[in-house]
Length: 128
Image 1 (cartoon, one colour):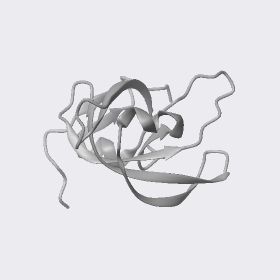
Image 2: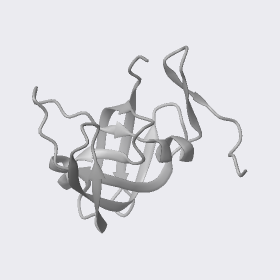
Image 3: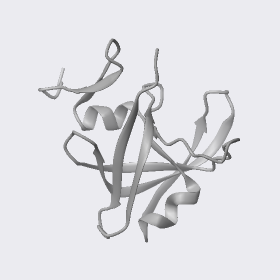
């Protein structure tokens, strides 16, 4: 499968002027929107909800911090209010790779088009 990268905008719901604009990898194996902990201060005073243990793709267990509320907009899709998971990241090339997980995709009514390697809009919210 190819890599799908999407432009996203994340803002602190209580401080809309505190914004992060970035590209993020669509990762349907991840649940949350995952950002590097080094970017947390860009969102101003954001409320920490809880800490959680996370298992990475390399089966490493790391501690993450869930913060909310944030407004999230994937380019081309409607804004949603949700939470973000901050993790300590140490990228070998110095470039962070945020992740867009399946919870945010569902909230934004976005689905992965495997043939076109892109996100497509889902017309209805699934309640089944």
